[in-house]
Image (cartoon, rainbow, N blue to C red; front, top):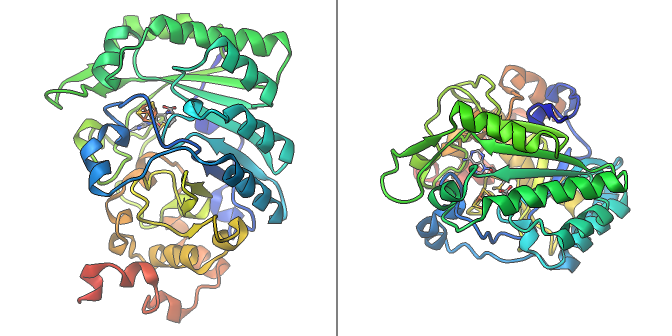
Length: 372
Ligand SMILES: C[S@@+](CC[C@H](N)C(=O)[O-])C[C@H]1O[C@@H](n2cnc3c(N)ncnc32)[C@H](O)[C@@H]1O
Ligand code: SF4
């Protein structure tokens, strides 16, 4: 029977401040498809106007670019903990998904290759490919527990039974070959209606919670009911719940963090090769590099990312465009570096001059700061 636990507790962790500075990032989040077939009310994918306003170009990542990113990881001293595939859109729409996973797994540059999916395409054929590809972890996201709820929350006609069948088939296939694939299934505890009044919220009843566990607990390895949180800055925040003092996994949250732990932990690769310090930068405003022209190693150790970290330890996250209004450091990640600011400054050998931020690209590029 599946273990009832949040995915952040799937592995033991060392306190983040003890790991800094990191020669090797913890993970590489590679977004092979920024296109999605759903428009979940709580996701930026539902904000068609917002995506148009920033001119967001969505599409698939070329297999050659994916391979280049994976190959670049060889420059780090140690393998990464994870390569995570599928962060902005739906990766199962990518026609070469299994090839991507196979390449990442056989590279040996990450201890775990992980996939996020809405499960809409878990057909017997794809499942066979996923198991054969060497995938080690799959996070299945459910948007509700009925056809009706999918229509109301994700704006799609989805036979919920097909999702159940897809997950069951995947579990059966992985058990049949004793694959090391870990299947995690989660559903959101409540979600706003996609259309009409944004105040309309669907919460899981006790009966639905039981139905969720009864339906999936014998067909996956880990299971959990997650919370929707206001994680997508500069988008339709009214449909992402208000900050209720608890994070995505029910953990208690701080009101504010000066330092975003994500910027010290991993890199996110957009489908066009631009690189962000986190997965939440959907409009690609906090771009710290481009893997089409630079190596992953040089981006991780480069001035752009260093400047971003320095701006935060100097207490100026509020002056960085996009980061200034982002709640993800509080609601999506438990780690906190604020209490260890001095240690971080010392471990990164940040000079007094750097802390003045006069040559800091993030702070200077902010129009409010630049004109003051
Ligand atoms: C953005 S999706 C991309 C991968 C895939 N399409 C999926 O749904 O799993 C990655 C994860 O973010 C979650 N997510 C998106 N918006 C969220 C929000 N506002 N609060 C909590 N989780 C959210 C989704 O439920 C999903 O588990
Ligand atoms: S949460 Fe996933 S499935 Fe839903 S719209 Fe966002 S990317 Fe698509």
